[in-house]
Image (cartoon, rainbow, N blue to C red; front, side, top):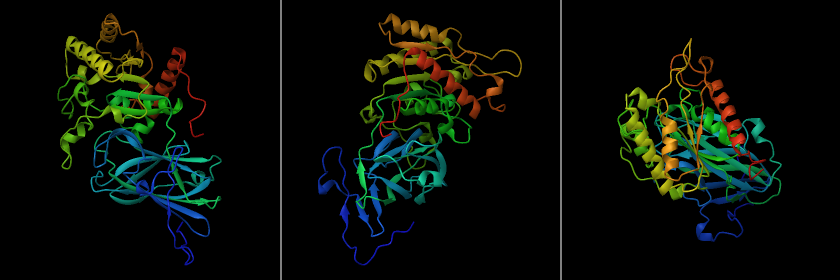
Length: 396
């Protein structure tokens, strides 16, 4: 809807941004206005302190890895009229696949490119929020060359309170998963990529924040594998995913500052090894690399968080049992870490979770239905372990 700016309305109101206090004028580079038909709008630059970042971003800022993006929270009961996403020249050409969720509703896919982009708001999402807070989440779908170069966001609402639109701190969930893996964790070849992946579904079901640091084709051991210049034992600690190697804009890596992971991860899930096996990495090397990898992230990043290590669900076959790899290796990794005094690791036995009916027949990766099945089974496993979904998102 186009804002009607009447001649009698000429003042511009500085946006109110605060968790408990009003931010000083020098911080208020977001500008809100209200017209006489009570339509309010706000301009949010990428530098705004209340822009909540999901996943990993470089300094441009542009996204890396699957399901990276941002979230915003608006105060004052209102009806969303429009969201314009203004993207910079580093945005993946010709487009980047994104998804939007309003008030934790269904994820709606859309494509965007450099320049202004209207975010789709189906009529269901335009209805007035019954809560005092309206949340907007926008994430990338894909897992390779999927950069959203954010410049700013413009939001327009119809406000019944006749007040300026107020940006407030996004109420992040106290639960936060870190998922580490390969194509099995990215929603590889599903229509919506990570937004249909089992790990993303689990995070949504538990009403948790998530970070998916996973790359199709990547091994754990630091080798070149299926187009990936490095293995996850190296790339996990970088801002960039392995698509940097082919970028003409950003063909280098930078260390990821894990202090930027807000909130701090509460649960770590690792499912990896298929590509190591495909590259004929000896089991002994895979095991020793896995042990060293867990030792490093336990020491440097997650000293007390529970780690959940998936065993392979294998490669389903049209007849007969699945083809498995690294028999006994994952138990060996677990036992080695426990012998070092690390008792907060748990093996998730996924044998039987994925059958031939659960995969795309051309690549044997989980289908949309397969991912939903895995998410259901792992959610049940987590609940049996003792983790319960939150009753509601913090803003609900």
